[in-house]
Length: 260
Ligand code: 3PY
Ligand code: MG
Image 1 (cartoon, rainbow, N blue to C red):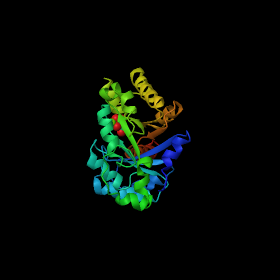
Image 2 (tube, protein in one colour; image 1 turned 90 degrees about the horizontal axis):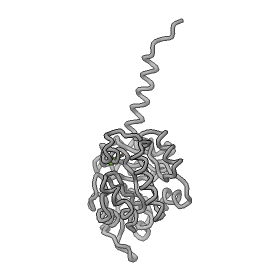
Image 3 (cartoon, protein in one colour; image 1 turned 120 degrees about the horizontal axis):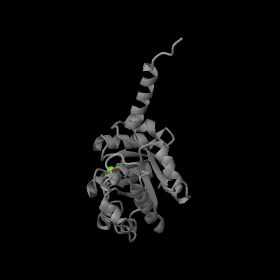
Image 4 (spheres, helix red, strand yellow; image 1 turned 60 degrees about the vertical axis):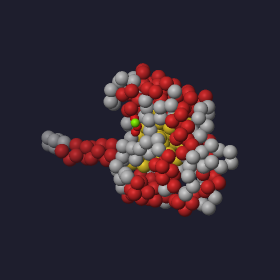
């Protein structure tokens, strides 16, 4: 099976940067996948993509160097299986609150093969095409399962969630987590309560030697999180980048002409 480059990056103690797709466009996914990111996440929770668009985006990503990941809309066996069967090399699951939920998520990502406890149903349609004929034998070890910590309950149970064997790591949702901590929408990652929560999640991962990642509103935040040791950062998403660049260009065009 073609190896998961993201796992290789993590195993060699390097950090990875992920692009994040909220637009439901295969061309946009292809473009972002060819832009230098280590991975690209198709966001089926808050992004616009439905199943058919997700499949088209994963197809487009297949010929880019970026590892294709999917954030599913919820912790659901069928949805997780469909994303993996469509060729996702990893799944990010939102709103994981307990070790029981984390176990259900992790099991959904694993085939019940070679002593692994899993619930993934067999039918790796695109997995075979992009991974190779031996995909079924190696998928359990190569597919990434990242549980999102972004609720008060999830934070309270973070050590138990991180310890679930079928989970490869945790992915922090700072926006939801900030709201859960009573800081309202758009809380700064530098706010002491959010900063402490992020450190606790990181420590939980470190204890069990798993990956810690985080979604970031800006490149500056992503840089700070990298410096703090998070192994996977996503510096915003395509809609944010598009809007920022449009605003910058319009500001240039509409700036008052300098007096001569
Ligand atoms: C959050 O910050 O809550 C996220 O889910 C990022 O997408
Ligand atoms: Mg969230």
